[in-house]
Every structure is written in C-alpha cells, then in structure tokens.
Image 1: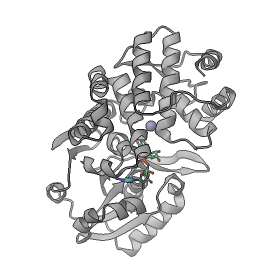
Image 2: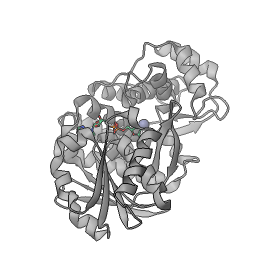
Image 3: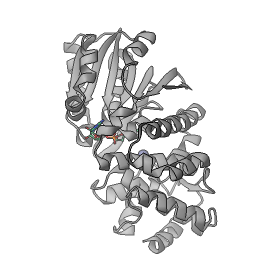
Image 4: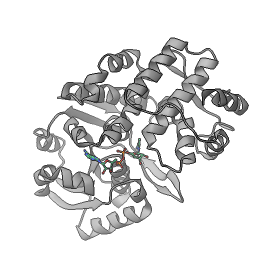
Length: 352
Ligand code: NAD
Ligand code: ZN
C-alpha cells in the first residue's frame, strides 16, 4: 500500500493499493461512516463484492447508465431527487465508484447538495485513477459542450484499488495509457524511461507495474494541483496533447476515445516542438514508438481545417488566449501563446 497526501484548499489522502481489504478501515479512519454511493451499471455488475462490502452503511446506491452520454444535467437531477428520497443529509459522505464520468458527476452532486457533502473517490479506470480522481474538477456536459458546467471541490479521500484495472476492456486500458505517457513525457523523464523499460509488463497489467504507474501519476498530478489548484497557469502543462487532441475528438464526432485523441495530439504537438527545435528527433521518435507500442494512434485522417476550426471554438483556444504545451526535452515543457495558427496549419500538413 502506498499513501500520498495532497495539500490543496483541502488536505486529503490518496491510498493506492491492490485489493479492498483496507477500505473499511480507511473509511473509518477518515471518520466516514454514512454513505451514499454513486456508480454505473458496468462497474456495479462486474464488481458486486465491493458493493456488498459497503451496502450495510449506505443510505442508497444510485446506478447511472454507463458512458459520456449520461454525463448531463438530467442525471444530476435524478441523483438529487434520489438523495432527497434516501434522506441524505450533512452527515452523509458521497462515494463515487467508477470511471471519470461517475467521479465528475458524483463530485458535482456532492459539492452542491446541501452546500457540500464529504466526498470519496474510488476510481476504477486508468484515466480516473491517474487523472480525474485527483484535483477536484467536477461537472457535466451541457449544450454539447464538454464539462461546461462544473466546479473545483476536492475529495476527502481517494481510495485507489488497481485490481479494478484488470477488468477494463483493452481499449479503455490503452486509452488511459495515453495520459500516463503524457505525465512522463512532459513532467518526469525518469518516469518516461520507466514506462519505456517496463512496457511489456505494463501492457500485461502486472500488479506491481500498475501500482507503480498509478503511484507516479498521482504524485505528479498531486504536485501540479498543489501548485495551481484553480488551473490558472502551471496546471496547463497537463493539457499537453489536449489542444490538438480536443480538436481531433470534436472533428471525429467523438468517434475516437479521449486518450486516443490525446495520443495523436501529443504526437502532433511534439512534431511542432520538433520543427521549432525545442526537442530533437531522438526524443520525438521515443515518444512515437512508445505510443505505437501501446497501439495508440499517432496520425489522423481528418481535414486539418476542421480540426483547427474546433480548436478555435474550444475553451482553451489557440488564438486569443492561445495556449499550447510544447515539450522542450523529455520531462519538461513550455506553455506558450506565441505560435501562430498559420504555422500550426503548415506543420500539421507536413505531419499528416
Ligand atoms: P468512463 O467513466 O465512461 O469509463 C469508461 C468505461 O469503462 C465505461 O463504460 C465504464 O462503465 C467502464 N468501466 C469503469 N470501470 C470499469 C472497470 N473497472 N472494469 C470494466 N469496465 C469499467 O470514462 P473514463 O475514461 O474513466 O473517464 C472519462 C471522463 O473523465 C470524461 O467525462 C472526462 O471529461 C473526465 N475527466 C475528468 C477529469 C477531471 O479532472 N475531473 C480528468 C480527465 C477526464
Ligand atoms: Zn485528458
């Protein structure tokens, strides 16, 4: 078992372990006694034993339909209604057991119901264990805009059981690997090298590898969140691959998964860095071959104009407040608003 303390506006523990033997103790230890659980149908059906463990102390379990399509206000509204019905009160802690969709919705419900209840994240996907359960961003999609409504509300405890990752589909697992590689490539060279040296074991989901990668990612994300909880400057570094990635996600009509789009985004943004002389060919090739090892895509066959159009519409615009995260060596990056759209356009033409 590993433990990381995150000191943001609220100080909280992240427990990283394999198995749930420690869960009840940890909840008790954090004085979390009455629960209201939010999960999705897949997690509930595959991991019934988890719920058996907690149902005695739960005033209710709300099971949402799985997937991004349900990350909306209708679901939030149904959760509020159920919370009222189940007599959830200020002594109740909301527990999210699921991927990023469940975590973002449950966090929003917890932070708004009765002006804020205590909140526990039990993330079950690689994306949620390495990324979304840490840092307190919650919310839902509105008017077809992702995460338009939301807030930042830190959890009281994050309990990560890496065994959950063994039941993820290969596609969802690899989807999360894109974010894992992102942390290494722009935040920590040793970690990037670890991923390269241990890629086979990671692909096979060996327990010690899972524990290590989740631990390193939580440490990296935790430090970034501590420095810039409200996402005003330093936290932007975690958007590496996301500016172009979001454009690709939208231009593909969300037919590719977020991590897949981020993978292409990282490849494209690194290519821009290469053209600007910020990284050398060797570093660029290392990134591409690691992404390819995990069968992540590194090219797109969409119209560049379409991608750029969506990027301009995105909240994190590349024109106006114009931010792009560009690696300047493995393990670090610059955040810049100096790159002209015409240069990006020309470089992307060469990239495809
Ligand atoms: P998800 O929650 O939709 O989970 C993906 C799929 O895996 C779902 O079908 C789910 O039912 C299934 N699943 C979950 N755990 C499983 C398990 N252990 N075994 C088998 N199947 C399982 O998506 P995600 O990829 O976890 O997260 C994506 C969401 O997270 C997006 O909505 C994104 O906006 C959000 N996000 C938020 C932050 C943040 O900081 N809050 C960061 C990154 C992403
Ligand atoms: Zn992401």
